[in-house]
Length: 444
Image 1 (spheres, rainbow, N blue to C red):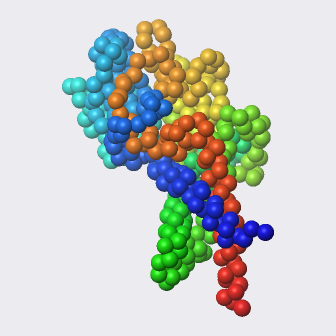
Image 2: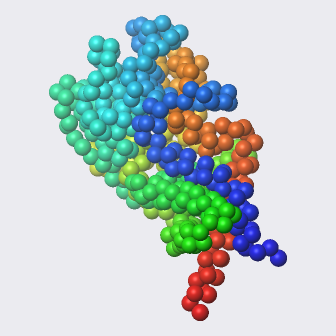
Image 3: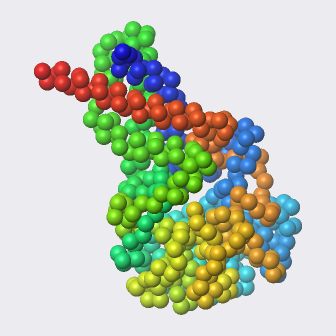
């Protein structure tokens, strides 16, 4: 029978590097609001990443009077074109999350540093400086902005004044929704599936940091023993490597590993994950509040609508809400009397006079709607005919993402990630077993 120590050593050395890549990249990807992830550029990268920048585009505007003037927002900056998209120039190195047009073709931008406005061809700070604005809606002189998916601001853009600040407190009876396994797995892996706010994210961080430490310290212990260095140093690092803190990380790490395997094979397992429904009574606390889950917002002068992972909620007094339409409302974009809803893991829809209809033949998870004459373009960076800026480099975020999901190496790399996940679970099993045996021997 193979000793647990030999199994531990084998899987640690064979999968340690993979685990290290997954843990470090996963930690930074969880914090995708950090600006340096987009300002740091990589100029040398494999050809498999030539389209890595496209997923960073968030918003699209075409001037109704001059269709050759285009403004495109992305996580890596704001870009404009005067020739219909043949060439683009950069206006600002800001994370752009939304673009909205006011009267007289004024453009407002939801950014990582508040609301900006385009004046004399340059974006300048307007309101809510220093706040991370995730979505916004504009009706006449009232701009409604959401800070970090939780705090809603009503702004008077003429008087440059905050009219109202509120939180969407949804009643419990509107949150008794069941979800599909596919949604639950993604929420868990991306750090939003357990508790409100950043708690779920911090639990993921704890697991990722422990994984990083275990991989590095494991290699160091092996090196010290292999080189027959000072035994005292080896024993000290073994104590650091195996202790109650690292054992406490078992739960978040196992969650990350199992959900990661499912996501690696999302295409093959998609039908299965969508066929399994999880009852609300078995869901973690976050699904009974969703106070910090505002993915999109719309205001038409009478109703305020928010989009979250359950659907579209509507209120006329900001206190009493109704669930108007079910299905993850990833984006809400208004064009006159029509409200377009981009779905995540569900159908795209359009709302006209409070009646919703499915939008067929539209790109999944479209982020914005651009109007050119009578034609409506549903903007999705993954599938669009609209011209976009082209780059000779990629961002640090794109590099980390490609390393994490394996596209940096090739489509076959998901099997290497799977092996890393399998090995890590065995490492925890053998490691805890060895730690427990040592504790028992110490007590006797």
